[in-house]
Image (cartoon, rainbow, N blue to C red):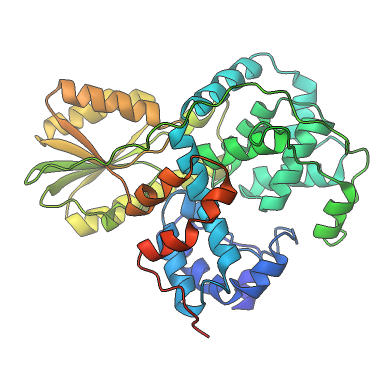
Length: 413
């Protein structure tokens, strides 16, 4: 079991692969994770972290499943740090759901910066030729593997912003294009946090001594700007909106199930008395960026959707069709019309690059007298209203959120 964790991970974009990785990690989810999670031992040794994020981001496996498996073996008190990290993703998603203008501000600024890039400096950064040993190694690792340790992501972002003096939005975009676990909320808000924009006046500084310590001396970077000030405010936060309302599904309808990368386990959802007669996947990953998506990230998303379609087809005994890109909107409407379904039902689409196309599709379907409904998971419905402030306020709610989900927090050992 330890061998599976320490060797280079094969990030197979299948639900079963994610469950296998979870099973292998569980024995290490308590003290080892708590004590060693901040160490980046390199791509060939991920024994101290779960590395589950690509599967969780696409919900090939869910946050609730991860917590349930860990809580079978440990009390909440023993694995609290790991469970808090699981909830960080939930928190970021909820925070952005309550403030969608932050995503739109990011994309608008990024697209403007992309069209006016300082080409040579940017190319040196993304090609890993800056001369900063750790940064260059991480740039190559990101492009080649589609993954980086979380601490490396923070150091990388800090060096990008404060040492290389590149715009944070194109750094966040570089991650969006190459990470298998690229997530609109976690990625955007984490880069904002490093820059000092998310928590006003508090930026994250990559220090050579810290990098050397937490990479076990693998790197000794020179010339880092360790006295940088936070970037100036570039947006005033909206007053938090109300969380998105849950949709009430109709009953007794023939429906098309529409899957995108936000939730690739739709067979877990309840469709009440509606009959799923057709299944479609909609791959919108190219909409992450105006630049080209990395091949590793593209493969993971497309394969995750194919895996989801296979499982859904088996459960509902229905044929599946795949669609790709924003331009497929009319094709999906035509497919629903040809199938003579009463409605299209989809797992909830989060704020990010897929939200706009999904809203456009919903409007077009309704104009063709076809209903459109989204299913929000209970996990999100319970947690998102508590994401109106900082994570530390949210963290206080985690034990109750766990109880509300049906978990017993008492000692197992």
